[in-house]
Image (cartoon, rainbow, N blue to C red):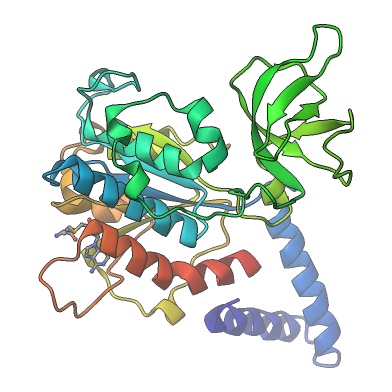
Length: 349
Ligand SMILES: C[S@@+](CC[C@H](N)C(=O)[O-])C[C@H]1O[C@@H](n2cnc3c(N)ncnc32)[C@H](O)[C@@H]1O
């Protein structure tokens, strides 16, 4: 919790004691007040809900790159930044006026920057041993082999054992067994306790039995289960046709409850002084070459609005910059480092 919060809490305690005319047992009253406040906060939170941090990134950053190889490297940098800072969701947004210009992932070679960007992000997030099964050959992926791996906790190696492994379903053992073979990247496939169509990505609870020759059926669990136990388990990727649909089409129940915009035109606040309120789903947005202000201007749903209306807070995370422009991929790294402490304070409050 931040110093200011603590001070406010202390002021509230003093005020309450004074109002009650009771100066005799400050510590007990303080404890009661803290309990009451905690109860009030928790009432608004779903007990099982784990807080998430999302970033939104303008797809246009890919348009300004001259070659496929450089575009691939740029997408790879965003994927690395998202992983290093344990980001749960990356939203790639276009600057389209209306949804009918929407894009869909297909296998044609002539695709938008957003689709390319999403494909590379998803590919990198997928453990290496699943990629062949889940990603058909595509020109977009021609240079992904040059990228440094994300080396995320769910990218386990062949000899490593973990409580969970990502896998892809191979085939039903037989229609009556109720089990499916799953490739979890070990020397042998494992059996899971469900009938699954082939080619589905699943999270498998590996249990304690390490004998891969046994017929033991392991459990398929929700992909959020490892996260519930404190592990970082990669990011989801989502497309939005403009900045307003980044907010509106949020897939988390209740939407984002705190949205931060970033820009050189934003407010300057020291990271140690920034107070992000306790959140369920935090979103941090990054613009393209012309910034988030252009994305807001071009969005029909945000007519007449400015950055101050669109975001809870609009921040300059790198004041006194020496270069006239900070590129989006640089701003993401700088900003996510800047937000680290305020986010962890918010999560503790
Ligand atoms: C090339 S810059 C865009 C410049 C634009 N004039 C703007 O609004 O900042 C691309 C993106 O990098 C991020 N960015 C650049 N400089 C920043 C700064 N000093 N603080 C926070 N974010 C910054 C913003 O997300 C911005 O939309």
